[in-house]
Length: 257
Image (cartoon, rainbow, N blue to C red; front, side):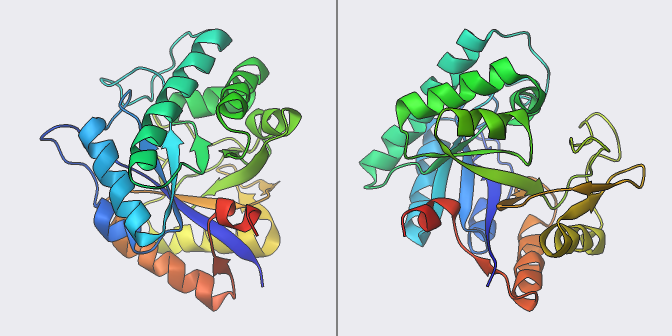
C-alpha cells in the first residue's frame, strides 16, 4: 500500500486577527507547518497550534519565512545565505521550544512563501536552509518542492527529505509553482484539485498550465489552511486517498519505524 503524508500550513493567526480553520483541518492531516512569527503567527498562536496538533498525534514542523509580516512572506527580499541560515535556525528553535514544553519535538522544517520558492531554484539559499536544519537537528525531515534545489541540498547534507506536491496550486512547465501574483496560481475547483492529486500519486505526473505533462515525485501533499473551505477540501482529499488505497501518515513517523 502506498503511503503519503498530508500536510497543512497553519498557525497563521496574529493577535486578535484570525486566519484559517486550524482545528477543523487538524482532524484530516498527518502533519502541519506552523508559522513562526515572521510572516504570520505569534508566540501565543505558536503555542496553541503546537498543543492542538500534539494532542491529536499530528506531526509538528516549523514553517520559517522571510521577515515580512506586511507581505505575508510572499515578497522576494534580497537576503544572503548567511541571513537565511540565521532566519531558519531562529524560527525552528522558537517553535521547538514550545513543543519541548508540551512534551514533544518538531519533526520537520518547511520554508514558507518566497523563501521556499527562492530556495527551490537558488542552490546557495537551499544549502543555507539545509545546513541550518542539519545543525539544529539531523533527525529532522526537510520538506521541499519536488525535484527542486532544496531537495538536492537536503540530501547533500545528509538529511531525510520529503518531495512536496500541492493539491491546490497550479504548476509551470519547469515543475515550479505558478507565482502567487497570478490569478491562476490557486486551484479553487475541488474536482480539479482532486484530479491533480490522483495524477501525481498514481501516474507520477502533473499537468502544467501550458498543457505540458511534468514528471513529479510525491512524498507529502500540501493543502493551505487559509483557503475558503479548507476543512471540507481536506475531508474530500482524505476520501480520495482512501479510495485509491493510499495510507496517510507523517513522513517523520515513517522514518522512525
